[in-house]
Length: 178
Image 1 (cartoon, helix red, strand yellow):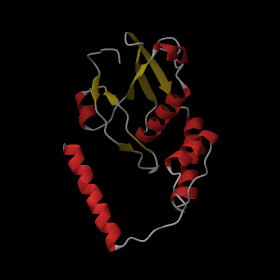
Image 2: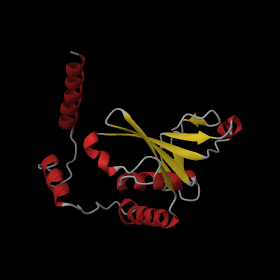
Image 3: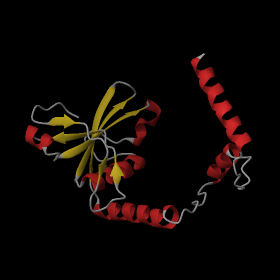
Image 4: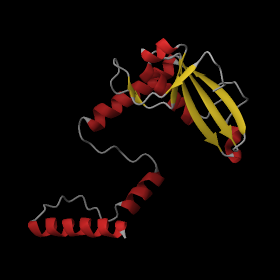
């Protein structure tokens, strides 16, 4: 984000909203107004760093606007919920040589919708250990290709299978070393 001597930048790691435990995020950076703010972990805003190919530059608006691709609006909004902040700034390099900045301010209605959807998914599928439905035809095609031999049947291991699995692991490890 624009070089300013009055702003310190710091890595954030993984953050979680204490009041909304499902809301966990890993923003690229956080901007702190003072060194004391860095030490107390109280940033002014978050920073996301992106690149975009020239063929996708049309998805970004004019510099210093909030015209951001939808997927990054969702990502930034989720991060703002996790951090309990109001602003995320996007630093974007387009085509390898055009630098732009964008601002996303927390939309509370969108934030509530995102959290409600996450909570519903968690309660309906994770808590109950239920496989979520395939949502797109392409998803089903990919899953069938990846798991074409999956019959849904659970196999019980035996000493012979365990021995073969260990042999496979050892051979695979050896091949990586060669």
